[in-house]
Amino acid sequence: MITLAIDIGGTKLAAALIDSRLQILARREIPTPASQTADALQHALRVLVTPLYSEAQHVAIASTGIIQDGVLTAINPSNLGGLCHFPLVEYLSALTGLPCVALNDAQAAALAEYQQVHATIRDMVFITVSTGVGGGVIQNGKLVIGSGGLSGHCGHTLADPNGPRCGCGRIGCVEAIASGRGIAAAAEGELAGLDARAIFAHAAQGQSQALALVDRSARTLARLIADLKALTDCQRVVVGGSIGLAEGYLAQVQQYLAQEPAVYQVELFSASHRSDAGLLGAALWAQGAMQ
Ligand code: ADP
Ligand code: BMX
Ligand code: ZN
Image (cartoon, rainbow, N blue to C red; front, side, top):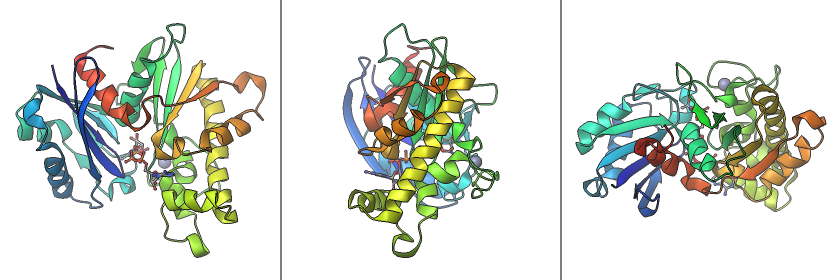
């Protein structure tokens, strides 16, 4: 059984053919279109999956946004160029003629990462620090999705009541500060207009504003992790996304977490599947291995 797995993020769209042993047989990636229109996303998805889907027997989608009944509803539409709503399953099943399932990207990544841990770990949280900040919670060995699909959306918990307004409408969300977009939005002067990847490159060169922006993200993430420990009693937190995986970032988060009282300490790990966690988690979800 071959799965066509698709990962829809705010910055990139990835697709892969994955076999029942969770081996990736082929993989493609293109940028996410920065357009408010569903047409632009439809076109990009068509370009992405057309070379792959004839080899697959079903489709599994991990996508940014709240995913319910196969439909994407953005909690932060600005991460998708203003797009609020997209019927993922309807569009991709019509395009490919294959059965199709969908879940949130961070929830999917949590499933894939949880499969890697020892059975003594029953409670785990996955956090992606990427275009946004997303999360997936495993409690008592099971992924928690919630009746509305909102469970784990920890990027929209409060980091700073005096902070910037988040695209979700709240003031001072973790995402507005710690995410790639949050880092880029706070850049001024010579860093203004750069994306987070470029800001990390400046930080690696020792540029002081860039170092401060990365530091602010890492400190905010550490506080979020302490909150998540208090909420879920997680035994492990796994961090992914291009920012979460960036050189030195998790070590910085760890340093800030170490400053919190002992009860908030939890083991931190980088996503073992790196940027494939969402794709593999979607495939696992579709194959029913964890349901
Ligand atoms: P998506 O949000 O589409 O899942 P990513 O996980 O790649 O995609 O996250 C995209 C964000 O990560 C963007 O803000 C981008 O600028 C930033 N980014 C990409 N590569 C790096 C890198 N090597 N170091 C730091 N930030 C990066
Ligand atoms: C946002 C939200 C989450 C998502 C998270 C990470 C939207 C469109 N997305 O908080 O559902 O899990 O970003 O998404 O509202 P990514 O695009 O950074 O991977
Ligand atoms: Zn928010």
